[in-house]
Image (tube, rainbow over all chains, first blue to last red; front, side, top):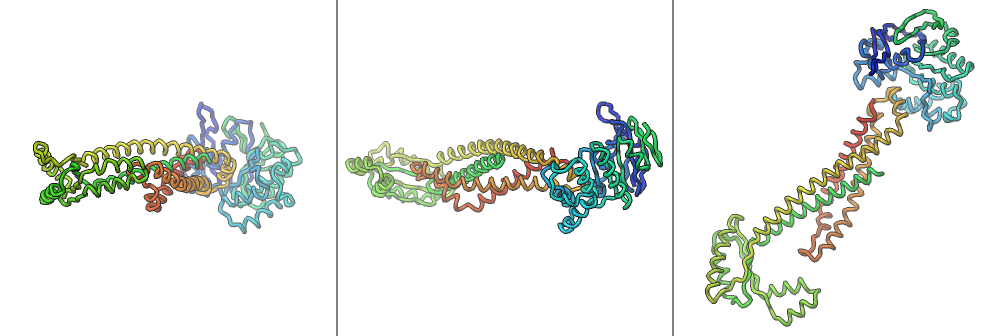
Length: 226
Length: 282
């Protein structure tokens, strides 16, 4: 589904983001990417979203080269990818419901779909009773769940999560990971970056380990080794 | 709001320049039409002498029309023009009729002015030597028209320069306003991009904002132009029978409206496009 072919990224000032990275992700896989800060995890995810261009090499989503897509095709690709971030990125002046409805609107969904899907998704992430709360009225874990709801509401084929549990306590972390597992069980491919050893050990799924922009380990049933 | 104001000022000035130059043009045509050469006679010139000159001028092939204004008519015209000024009317009573008759001569073709003027000049010259001098003054409107043309040409250059400066300023201010709006909603924009919102979905609202600013500014400036034209009329009633921009404005309202509306929308679109290109990348 995702294929990195000898991808390198050098930022201005000789800063290496990625160095000759090659790997593939199969549909339905749950891949965790681990590594120190600055190892290139976030750059990797930004490449998949088409937010960053590789200095050399190609990134494919199915058969499409992400960085050769036109201005009209890139938004269509992004609609097939849901994304979750450590800093959540909810709009503070919108309620949980509106935050999710907003992304459906932007993706061109109808009002009927919005009215039926948003409560369903919030129910799925365990916030069925907090539709009309604003982000500042929710706890960190709840905010992250709204963000996950937002990422999956358009039924993406791929979910990418950049350290989604970075700011959460162990209990919330556990619950968020349970939600990811559930999403993966219904067939969504997930790429997750994390620092959390417990998360990796609990998942028992494929792990890519990055160091200085390179993938140094690729374990089928990975453990957190650094 | 600042962008609406600067756009309004720009459109207002554009509108006034437009009206002004159109009005100058029509005035010029009027003058060109009215009289080409006017011959004023001495007050004591006899009517027969004037009429016989009129006959001989009318016979010239270059002349298309000759109009005779008698000294009595001239006096009546003068009284009418100065009916509010009792001092002038009073002194007029004492002096009697100080005016001479007048001939307004219209040439068939502008290039014939010289010939006619020469003909009349010869006659005036003859008269000056003899005792039956009747021509007092020969005024040749071509000079005035030429001067007016020069004034119009240079005022047009000035107004083009002013317009360019204003257009650039208003675009810059509007770009700033819309950039600010884009900056305020940068979070929305980044989320929109992440979920794959289309180009138009992200940029559309800012385009619309620019267009709305342009439309509002066009309406404001149209409203402002009316009192301005009234003011110009009132301020100039003593000059050349008053510059009646009001009637010109109301007669050409449709044209002015469309021009200003179109320019407003164009300015708004250019400004938002520039702002979007710079700040709302997709």
